[in-house]
Amino acid sequence: MPVSAHEIEGHFRHEYGRCVATLVRFLGDIDLAEEAVQEAFTIAVDRWPATGLPPNPGAWITTTAKNRAIDQLRREASREDKHTQAALIYARDQQHGQDENAGLETTGQVGPVQDDRLRLIFTCCHPALARTAQVALTLRLLGGLQTPEIARAFLVPEATMAQRIVRAKRKIKAAAIPYRVPGDAELPDRLEAVLSVVYLIFNEGYVASDGGALVRDDLCAEAIRLARLLAELMPDEPEVLGLLALLLLTHSRRAARIGADGSLVLLPDQDRRRWDRDLIAEGQGLVRACLRRNMPGPYQIQAAINAVHSDAADAADTDWGQILRLYDQLLARAPTQVVALNRAVALAEVDGPAAGLAAVDELELIGYHPYHTARADLLVRLGQHAYAVPEYDAALAATANAAERRFLERRRQAAVQRAG
Amino acid sequence: MTQYMLAVHHDDQPPISPEDMQQSFKDVDALNSEIQAAGAWVFAGGLHPPSTATVVRVNDGTVVTTDGPFAETKEQLGGFWIIEAADLDAALDWASKAVVACRLPVEVRPFQEG
Figure (cartoon, each protein chain N blue to C red):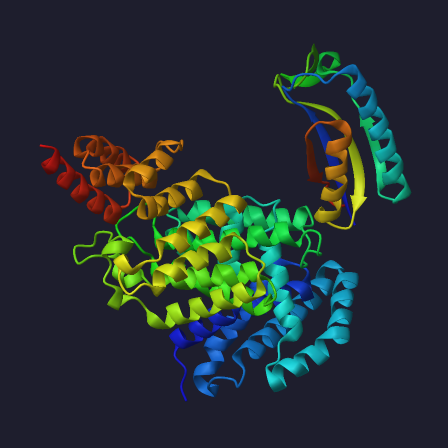
C-alpha cells in the first residue's frame, strides 16, 4: 500500500519521543539523537512510498537512526581520530543493542524504551532549567513538535524559541544534567515539576492568554497525550492519574465552553449535552481509582471537583456541598489565593453570595481577572450593580483573550443597565 | 566526571551575628572534610572583600592597573569550591550542603572540558 509523505510525517511525530529517548541513552547526546532521527526520516521519505510501511515503524525508525549514528561516528572517528568514542559507543551497541532490537522488532515490546521516555521527560523538566525551557523541550523532544510550531503555540518569535531550545540543550550537555529517573527521595519534587509542565501546556491551550481563539485544541491534545504517557509509565503515582483525570474532565467541556458568537460560556450556562461523555467516563473512572487508593493530592482533588460538576445533569443539580468540602481539602494542601478564590465561589453557592463576597474580600488578587469577575458576579447577585461595573472594568483590563473579553463586556453592559 | 565551581555570593543581606559566623566557619570546615573524604575535592578558598581587589586591563595597548572590583555590584564573589561530580544532581547535592554551611547563596557552574 502506498504511503503518503503526510502519513510518514505522522508516524515520525507519533514515534519521535520514543525514538529520541532511546537514542539519547545510546548516544549520550540529545542533538546527535535528533539528527539521527531526522536522517531516518529522510530515508523513510525516500523508501516508504515504494516499500510500504514497515511492520513496526517505531522500531524501524530507531534501528535506522541508530545505524546512521554509528556510521556517522565511525566516519568522524577516522577523520578526527575519535577512535575511543566510536569504539565505546560501538561496544555499547554490541552489548545492549542486540537484545533490545530483537525485542523491538519481533514483539514491539518496549520495556526499557518506556523507561527511556521517562528519563527524557525528567531531564527536560530538570529544576536547573527555566520553566519556559522545560515546556519547550518537553514539547519538542517528547511531543515531536517542531520549533516553529512551539513558537506559534506560545506566541514568541521563532528565533526566540529556537534560541531557548538551543540554550537549554547546551546547558543539559555542559552542566551534565543527568539522564535518569530521580530516586525515591527526590521523586516527589521532581515529579511535581513534570506535572506542572504538562498542566501548563494544557492551560496555555485551554485559555490562550492572548489572541482570538479561546481554546487551542492542539496544545490541549498534546498535554493529554503527555499525561497519558506519564500515566502509562508511572501507573502507581496517584497524582499522575489525578492530572490525567483533571485534563480529561476539563477537556470534555471544550465544545460547550464557546458560544455561537465565540464568547466564553461559563459552567452554569453550558449546554451539557455538548459535553464529551467518553472523556467524562474515562476521567471519572480515574477519579474513582484515585479515591480507592486514598493518597489524595492537589491534582486528584481538582479532578474530583470536576467529576462532581460532570455528575450534575444541570447546574442546579450540582452538589456544591461536596465541592466546598473538596476545596477545603485542596486549600489545606495548596493554600494559595487562587484556590481560596475558587473556594469562595463554592461557598457562595452553599451559604449565599454575601458569605462568598466576604470570603473574596479577604483575598489580595488585584489584577487577577477571575478575582474581579467573581467579585463583580457576587455583587450583581446581591443587587449591587453599580459596584459591579468597576469590577468588570478591572477584569477587562486584566485579560487580552477575545472570547473572555466578549463575555465580560456583555456582563458589564447588563450591570450598567440595571444600575441605571 | 565533570568539574563544577560552587561560587559563594555575598548579597545585600544584613551580616550574621559573630556567634553564627563562628558556627558557619565550623560547618564549612566539616563540609570540606566531607567533600575530601568523598573524593570530590579539587580546590576551595575564601576571598578577602572586594575592596581589596585590583583590576588590570589593557587601555590603548598599555596595561593599566586600577583599584577596585571589576564590577561594582551588590553581589560579589566571596569564595568558592571546585568539586568533581558525576553529574549536575551530584553537584547540586554538594551545593545544598554548601549553602547551609556558609549561609549564603551558591551558584553552580560547570567547567569546560579539557
